[in-house]
Length: 390
Image (cartoon, rainbow, N blue to C red; front, top):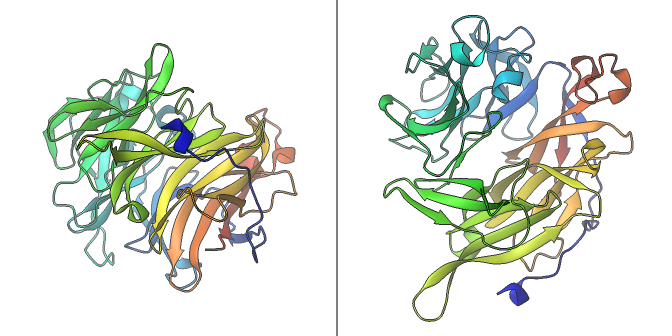
């Protein structure tokens, strides 16, 4: 099937569109923000470890500062995130998206970390008190399922030794280890497939990372990729239902940290079906993929990603990739990176007037006096936003 895959492509100019960016919010500790499209909210933790939600104008994507609401005065600091590798996240439930996060019950360390939840009313106007989910043992770095109005929401997370688990949100007794997933040196996200009760992740096979799909209803583990190249060495794979492929499950993985590859199940002609590579987008030599995440808009699938121009160093720019092999512009830059600054953690929010916009954090490495460059606290320039040309 490899002969059916288009050749690798490089970034192009999108007709009528120029890279751009504007300051969305000047707060320098508005880091690792996560956006809820259905609630028009975003959540984050500030430098003092306080958990917040803020409101996004659904028409234009403007951050509405007077709407900031504190949910927990003692959640997780940026320093604590070095333990968990993530801040607060959203989990979709039958009563709307809710906030899940790590909360420490003693001096911050993996053994004192617990899973926590703050739930809001269906209209998002009121929020309850933080609750610990159990068990009363080291658990951290939760990630939530993302199926709208889900009566059985799920979360994945790690224990104090970075073994990976999943469970139903409100049922601590349902906790089980993720089959086939080895413990990791630090917490990494294990993502739920969107539109199907499953988990997707990479594991080494003969010393080369390949992508696996765990079907949670049957506990069946499927190896999706068997081709060349190390999959998701520093990123994670994603699975969603792609509208351009009749809502069939589709997988995104990065290969050798320089290429996006896409797979979906295709009919073999004899009634059988197999996971097959359908597209490949390769970056310029020396560039590195960071934080890729798929989204859908107007019946098409896209990926937002950060691209580090020289290995793992700055400058970094934000790009959009089109999943369909016949897309007229497969890959284009949306942020301006002429200033040689660092841009990380791109997140999509779809406005009603301007289509998808991308939020991300921006850092000026020249301000670093700590040796943490380029993402030092003093280097933060705030939350930025770029239009996408979609």
